[in-house]
Image 1 (spheres, rainbow, N blue to C red):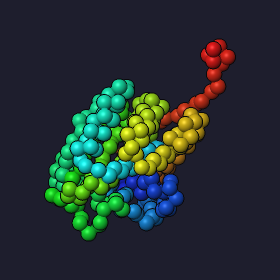
Image 2: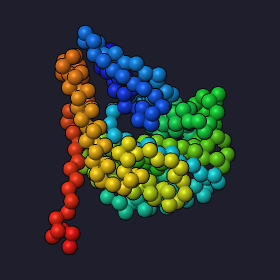
Image 3: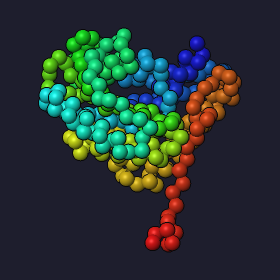
Length: 261
C-alpha cells in the first residue's frame, strides 16, 4: 500500500500540467506520512490507471490531421522512413488499432488518450468498437520512453487528433535521446501533423543547449532532493525511483579555438 501511495505522490508531482502552470502540487513529510495536496487532472488520473508516472523532464506533443485515413497512413509511413535513418534503437510499424480498455498496449493507450482529450466528447467513455486510430511507436534508446505518434478519430470521421509524451530524464544518453525526440518532432512538423509541443527542457523552442542543460540539471536536483527526503523519512526499502540509478547532468562549455577551426 505504501509503495502504491508513493507512486501516486510521484505522479501528482510530475504531471506536466504543473509545469504549464495550470495546477499546483505540494508535498510534505509529517511523522513518516507523505501528505500531498493537488487537484488531480484527468490526464494524471488516466496515467495512474496505467501504473503511475516516473517524475522527470518530459516532452509533450499533440498531433492533428484532417483528411482520409489513406492519406494520413501515407504521411505516417513517410515519417517512419525518415526516422529509420536516425540512430534510434528501433522503429515499429504504422498500426491501425481500435480503442479498447481490454486490448493490447496501443489499443488501451488510444482509448485513454481519447478519453482525456478535449478533442472528443466525453460522454462516449472509452469509445470501444467506435473509436479507432493510427499509431507509430519508436524506441528512442535505453532508459528513454518511446516516442509515439498517435492519432484517433470517431467512426469514419476525417478529423484526426492525438497526443503523447516522451520522458527523456532517465535516458542512458540523455542529450542524444532528447535531441532525437526533437528531430522526430521536426519531421512530423514538416509533414503537417504536429500541432503543439511543450518541451520541459525548453530546447524545442530555443534550440539552445545551455537552456536544456539548466533545465535537466534543475530537474535532476529536484528529484534527487525529493528522493533523499523520502528515504530519510520512510526508509530506503520503502522508496523506489529510477533517479537512484540514473542522474543526468549537462555541462555546456564554449569550444576552444582549435575546435572551432
